[in-house]
Length: 495
Image (cartoon, one colour):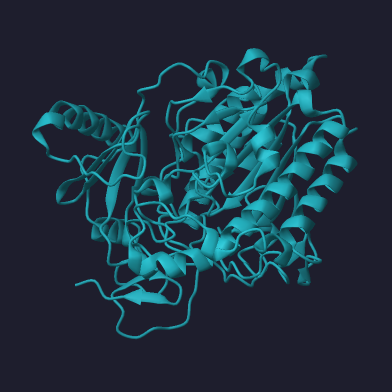
């Protein structure tokens, strides 16, 4: 009850701070529309503009000429639910407890849409949610949608040829017609058409499931563009994964090309409606895909390597001027996104947010290149359960990783793109490592973390250790003799 009251007070403060702005004659021009396009499992390297000569992404290749391209964007925890919770709250998984898939994001968290609603925006959410924790096929009840007022979404469904959704207050399950990525893009365009003349700006969140597996459901005509035998794999994919990686990469690339088309349709509609110059558009992904790299099977994310953690991030905003098409080498992590967007929209940033306002870098992409972006995996689960938990920072040049056992990885990403030469603890990189370790620990201390704790610390801190339920209002099938529940249907004993 106390946390709910605190959240209500925060919303009241946000609304009050915006009241002055909303009364001004020029308020509408001060507040741009926001179109946020989130894809799933699209690694930063698998785009034409990023240097992949095989995958066809012509619309995003064109869009990058108009956008600021953050080449060192990282997923705060490279897996679905933790990323999405961090994006919605501007907070780290170590603060929210959202570090495992299929958890329920607590209602007391102050979230993205609630802040934009208080600022006078119309808010809409389309597609995959994965923050409800009440079952992937269940309806995300309106009171659990964290403020999104228009809704055509679902908790989680990757059946792209029969993907379900729930339509606003209708509790009956519906299905997108045809290939869902195309259908959701069409729905986004309809929403914009219906709201373009509204007195208030809109914040439209488009959450596409592709190119996340299954890959065989990609459009056949696009799969034909990528015969497996002609696909070139990175040098960090070992021979034992080559056949499987090529098989999966065919459908993965086809999903990428299809998703590129859908995003192109949305961008073209924004221009057609005459609102492009007064809109913020973001394209990004929740995490990447290992696809055999470093001997990790296709479908794997979770890991600190670039294939998993480095995500695309393109942004356009009003009055970009000469910044259009510029490359930002400064690193950005997930909690930084919400405060940066709020700043661009002239909305006060709530004190609960832990991320940085990086809008100054949006507006001057060449600055602050050596800043460190923090990311982490507090408790790998599912197929990643045997791998180590970690904390990491990425800069314009380096990736540095620590586990509870100490320094683990150091890569020079500029000179070792595929991260095949681990420089950790090498004498000639001692000074570099010390600087990165200092940056890492400073970022951890800033959010209340004094050391790199083992996974048991967080499982106990958030009440997951020794329970058969993850939260009071989150239920899974009874499982006997389980000391720690780490994901629905995925339980492990931790001694």
